[in-house]
Length: 204
Image (cartoon, rainbow, N blue to C red):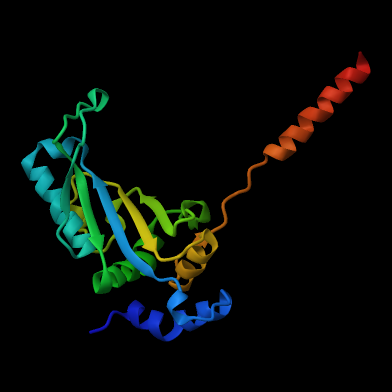
């Protein structure tokens, strides 16, 4: 059975993006290439049973067996040695990727308490959209009653887009709740301090 979002992309999203982005060639329409999910292990990496639990949870969330990543070098501050278990990683493509995105957008993210959307600043110019999830229990595959420790996840949506704007447009078509980041007020502060300096000079 074809995943719902995969079918939606083919039948609806591609046409919509061609119009919105003023694209002439259908092959130039951006698409989601893969989704990478990472989970840090911390102290759980040292205990076999806890490590097995993390692996099981990650497999349940993503629908795919994770790969155990290793530390590339020793870090004394974190008591980590080169070659030791560092985290778990899953790379999703094709059908599993679409199925995960569907669950993420429509079930998991809405379950985050006081959720206000994903900031567009999480998107880079290379077509990657990265964000963190503080609690893995937002995924319906996790039984909260059996959870010993709440763990965080890092998610990266890799697309074929060549600009930040196109990436945001693509992900919004998949109903990602992306919001504009608050603008920095550095310019206003500079003007304020400039006025103060002028007033001080006048007083002198």
